[in-house]
Image (cartoon, rainbow, N blue to C red; front, top):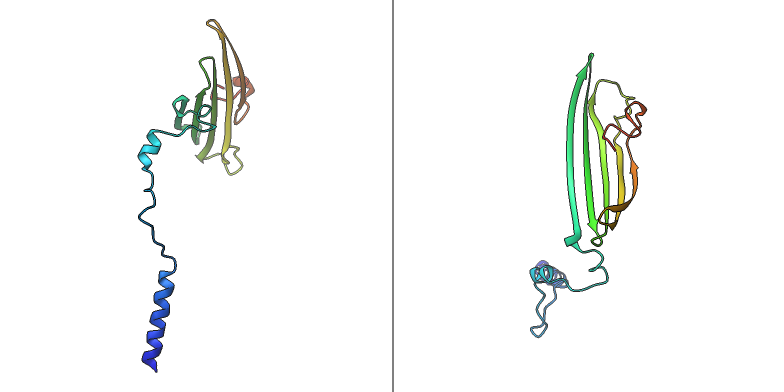
Length: 155
């Protein structure tokens, strides 16, 4: 009786293991080659608008350390800049960054202990060879009235 139970369990396990398997017919077309698709993209709704040849992306990482009067601070920042040229006369630049102080001796309540996000966008339109219009929005991590209108980053 025990041997019959083992055979029945083996048959049940065998059928359960083969259920998710499926066969492919020989007359089905082969799958497309990924390298061919990437090198020759098919035209789509966004292919003229979001052309990767017109897109540029730049990254910047900065770390600095300063000490004065018994106090010290480390400041780190990362910025990602994306440029997209819609046409010869119109292009867009977008920036996003994060700034924080991973180490300082100013205490737990220092405002740079929490990461500060900053960024902005610029839309440039070239009217003629000697003139252009720029619409710009910037968000700086903090305000420093003694150093000018925007932050120490020079925005």
